[in-house]
Image 1 (cartoon, helix red, strand yellow):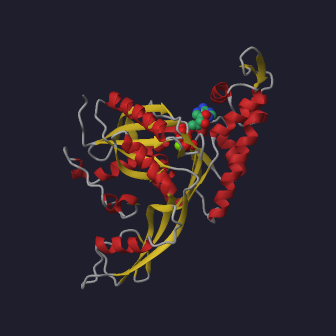
Image 2: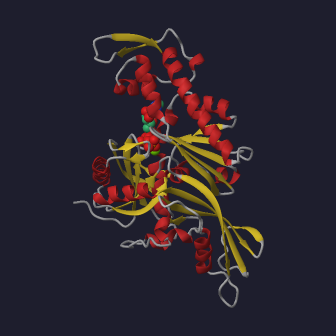
Amino acid sequence: MPGKNANIVVGLDLGTSSIVAVAAKVKSGGQLDIVGVGKAESLGMRKGTIVDIEKTASAVQKAVEEAERMSGYEIDRVVAGITGPHISSMNNHGVVAVSNERNEITPEDVQRALQAAKVVALSQDKRIIHILPRQYIVDGFDGISDPVGMFGNRLEVETSIIVGAKASVQNTLKTIEKTGLKVEALVFNALASSEAVLQNAEKELGTVLVDIGAGTTEIAIFREGSLLYAAVIPIGGDHITSDLAVGLRTPIAMAEKVKIEEGCVLTDLMPDDKYIEIPSVGGQEIRKVSRRMLASIIEPRVEEILFMIKEKIKSSGYSDVLPGGVVVTGGSASLQGLARLAEEILELPVRIGMPQNVGGLVDIVNSPAYSTAIGLVCFGAKRFSFGDEAAEEDEPVLVGFFYRIKNWFVNFFTQ
Ligand SMILES: Nc1ncnc2c1ncn2[C@@H]1O[C@H](COP(=O)(O)OP(=O)(O)OP(=O)(O)O)[C@@H](O)[C@H]1O
Ligand SMILES: [Mg+2]
């Protein structure tokens, strides 16, 4: 039986097409080395949301066991992702009086300010997933990222709040816990992906992170180091595949294979004298289809997805302050020609985001499809970011540990 190791962090991405578990070892200095990866077909999810707990739980088990075997460590806890079109963001503001006599701001004051910012009118079926401080204001002076130790009378915090469906959160926790795993933290997928693919300079400057998966597209806008806006659209690579299946009259599995191997979004650049053979539904007939024809089916759907992304960016109100452009990640970011078409439609610079800043078994995860799982690991690893805490046998304390990271992340477990 593999042993436990306090320095192992595991990210669990519950995706519409696959469930991915990535285990990494946190080395001294915070460097992450990937030591195990597991992947299982996801049969119990639709559009980023769990629709079958049993099937999803068994895929989680499979992915985690694979990561355990590869790493040689026993996995008993995970940092899990959550997504789905039920997720949205809003802004709020909290104000408190500094409590002690010396007027020196303490961590407790900051917690109280964040608690005050948590008071928002939510419908019964919604709950807060994250409260993300954007800046603190002390006695009217704004732009403060960590007010602890400063003097003042009045402490204010401006926050982005990420909200999701209560049932979805409960189903996610139940599914994972059913397999005997403990959920250390639940993180919105795009917030996690941003840890793996965005550079700090991009987060400062104003950048959109777009994660196009199989059933969902997540959008998150960062500026001045903070997340300002988040949205999830229930559309992704599965729609491209089903268009191909209909257009080419071929089974879904074949359409998926052709898309991955031969797909491109730029019709005009595709040769019309290069053919691929495609079996029809039933398999009796084999037809020849040009790569240009293939692209002509893919392009309009990708255009549609990009226009929906553009609409969300516009409705965020930040479209004029995004010099960092757009970073596209997620499995569908591997589609040939995507960055070029995205630049044309979004009218912003676009790059494809690959997971960065990790070592170890990097060749296995060297694809934008792993951004979320690796980002979840990055989040989990932050609990070790204070050197000494990486000591062996350290039982990580969850409540409030993210608080210490410049107060910028408050997990819902701390509420
Ligand atoms: N080379 C490729 N070209 C085009 N599409 C690709 C390629 N590789 C993967 N994909 C697509 O990426 C999608 C899977 O991406 P990903 O693993 O990020 O999704 P997911 O996390 O399971 O789903 P979601 O995030 O929507 O819940 C599938 O639709 C797949 O067809
Ligand atoms: Mg995904």
